[in-house]
Image (cartoon, rainbow, N blue to C red; front, side, top):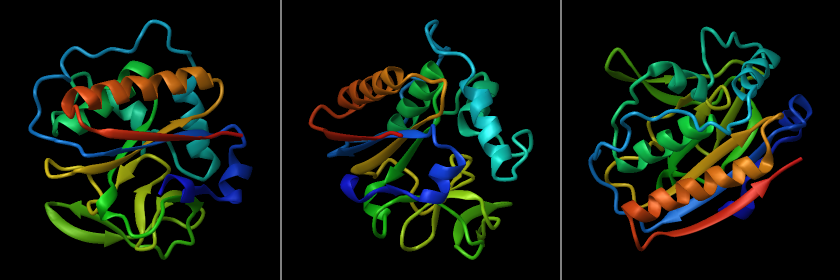
Length: 215
């Protein structure tokens, strides 16, 4: 899977500074939340300006970042983090500590490899609205993560689909750690190491593989 993940040229043209650390974690033993999200704050040595870089990236494909916020911006504004399950809580904690957008996907729910593209506008996106399952579609030109079935995350890292979300039953996962300048690549790698460590605490037998796609 890792070797097949691609970033489309149209996205690279939009943000040539984009880099992503991809991570698979196989053999997870997930479970209910255990309180690890309490009192999480960004680390003192996090590089400034990264949230604003993501806001600017959203403007670049026509989205107002005040109406649809980058995932890390939304998390940082929450105060107390939500408790979902151990694995989701772990990557949310790392996201806040490192001020870094991180997505987590159930690898077994994927249909073909992940790729980051600009939408045509007809791709299906399964989500929930008013408690009901619905199919929506991205705007034409919107940056999306997708597989062969449809959109897995809209507006780069704004909202994940229902189909690939990580649940307590998830055994194998894909994590997507996304960076724009001025965020240092060594800081991106450090975030990956922190997430790997937390996943190993949750699941001592987990097998982790990584791939860095950089400019």
